[in-house]
Image (cartoon, rainbow, N blue to C red; front, side, top):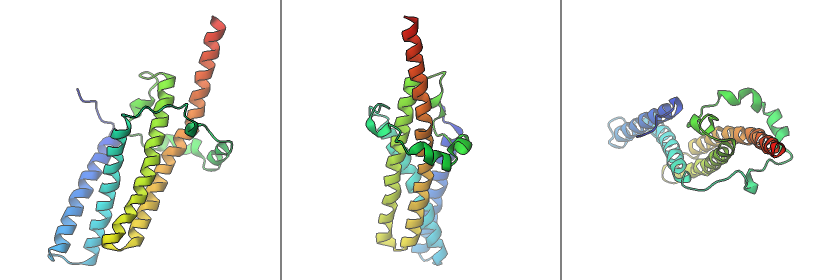
Length: 190
């Protein structure tokens, strides 16, 4: 039985489909010289870039599900300067407004604290990979030129993913403290 998709997952799937169809239509109109207005090519490139970026994010997210990622890896340890950055960025105020593609990964009714911490690390890994995917958009400037469009798309996409990295890195220490408190409580009971 397939699991039910979250609202944000459905929205992203619809955006990919719409952007892809619009990109194909724009390219067909422009390159078939039916409507050879430069703006049509620009809309085609922008919508293609959106579909490309979102689709690759989903595909790599599915691939990383097969990896054994744990919060114990050194990469996921909070650095001494991070809490200061998160205060400046006001992460605590806006983190709940961010879309969550798979909210069930963080549901404590379905997952242990340890699983949630590992899921946070996996999601963070996905968003670091997405940062590289964002940079790969620059390669489309080779056939089309228009470096400024691809540069803007890469920067915006990287900023988009950076928010999710910040959220995971902000929240994980709290979950780890809860894990530690439970361990101490269990040790005191024995």
